[in-house]
Length: 141
Image (cartoon, rainbow, N blue to C red; front, side, top):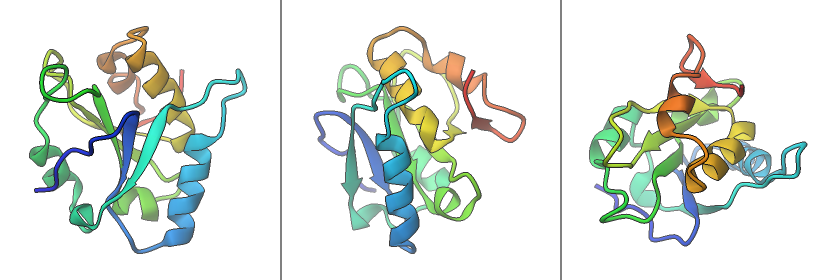
């Protein structure tokens, strides 16, 4: 099992190393400010210990540990599905011990909204998770 990254900002972890161009494209979309000027306060993490892990393995490896054992309430993962699926839906994993919620996926352009609102406690993880479409992907409100 890979350890949760010790980052200052919310981590966006690379778990698939098959396509550097797509990884860089996803990074650019996440880092791009929204129309309202909001940016994602994230740190991009490349750690080969995550390479090849599927969604179920990633989720099972990281039980909710925020706020007592980990500083971030959420983890974003760029896995094989994000790399290979059109729109590149990022895996969003709840790490808040006080919230019982399943992971969901989000378009890279929605990472800013999720990270900003969760970090400021403007919204809860559940609000984003339950707003994902029938395909399980959050595309915005």
